[in-house]
Amino acid sequence: MLCMLHWSRAYDERYDAVDIEGIVAHDLVHRAVNGCLLDEVDCGEFWREVKVIAKEIATTRCAKCTPRQKFIIKTYSVATKKKYPEVWKQLRYMYKNS
Image 1 (cartoon, helix red, strand yellow):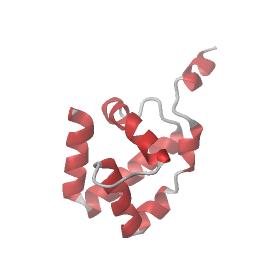
Image 2: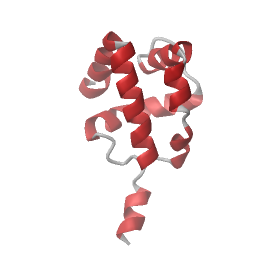
Image 3: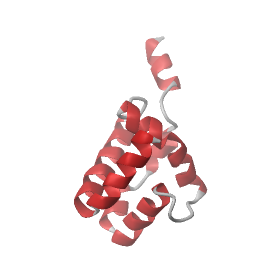
Image 4: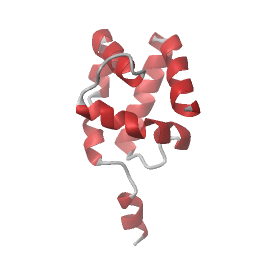
């Protein structure tokens, strides 16, 4: 029963399919995702949905994430901090303080 309760509260598994390695490996794509998350450019439907849960992910340290989603968040975070530190600061402020 506990296992069922945990999974019912997890984020949709379709978020597991994000090709995070491809995103962070290509600057143009990485910048587009950053711009979307910062409300600087239009996002597709998928990323608009990600933005809806982004604050909860940031404030709960991905408590409802699957292991794959945690890997995606960690990979994105590390790459963004390293390659775009100013963007990372903006994202942290935006999603932790809004």
